[in-house]
Length: 471
Image (cartoon, rainbow, N blue to C red):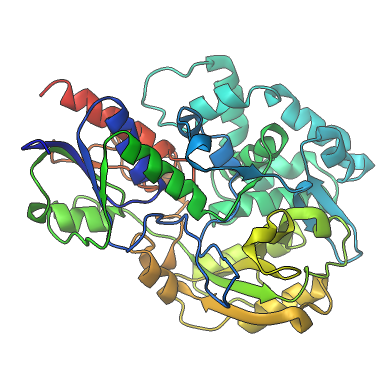
């Protein structure tokens, strides 16, 4: 081992591992320190309920993972990552048994919205179809990092993307299209009237048409394990079970890269109140189920989809998000659900299934949302409770204990609100740099934000190697 490392990375989530691999690939000596006993961060897979049932404690479905420019540049398939595509990316069922859907076919998706809105949906997505690679490269970045590759398309997308979902969806007339759009926007964990929530919805829709919403074979851990395997192949070292409390506990290095919350970075690196204005958002109440059979959705489309959103209307979805952000107990939650064992039978014993669901709750909320979540599930899947063999529940305190980056249970590592929507963690030409010239931040608190795509790590690594070339 060299006497001084080029870079030390703290945190072995997808962004930390991506940053480490990017640096190692350029010949830098890199070592990663992870507090948990395994790598993964928000991309893990564990037996949370019963033996043989393999659940994803956090992320499960990866539309931005399969479409990530950072992941595409690495040989992750050779390191065991295999994407599995459900028949439908998304179903958004309604009480009458019908559903709006997203699939690889724009026509199928548009027609599911009803004849009044099919044309409007086609017109919304048409300018961007077939251009995912350039859109992803331009949108999944920080605006301060030079000119976009395709300025005209980026500007056009930006005009749509900066709008609140409620404004962008005014081009739709019916409840199905508006409900689908609100459900997509809700991944921002913010009211759908918020700045740029329209961009979140549009990006997820385009991802479905370009690359699908897949799950990794074996679970989300496969993403992290592939990144770790590639890093080791490049000569990088990973130390698990190694919690870092102070910068001087780490070996000497020319740069320190943190895949942590800004709060933790400031504490460990002694940066004082450098991020005192950074805000964290609402949380989730997560339930992982072991089921004796597939979810008995009333909607036929929902039985074929990898992801199912339970709203159903735009008004109900926005109301649920507003309640969570305002600190109110959930009453009729909006649910994001995933059924990975439909396409990956290895996730559960033969004939059995794993099922993943969360609803939004206030930050730090200590209540139990099991009853309101299951009531909502029963509304769209009568008899669901009869299939439950076991459940593992995690509210905000458990989510925060499981992953130190989730302050108050905020799985996005920062509120999607106000200027912080587009400027995070604070206004800076290089948002990955800090006041300490050798310390960098690469977590989802930096652009382009949350999701298992590694792009925050990719851009942070770029900032690091630019510095290492000059010192």
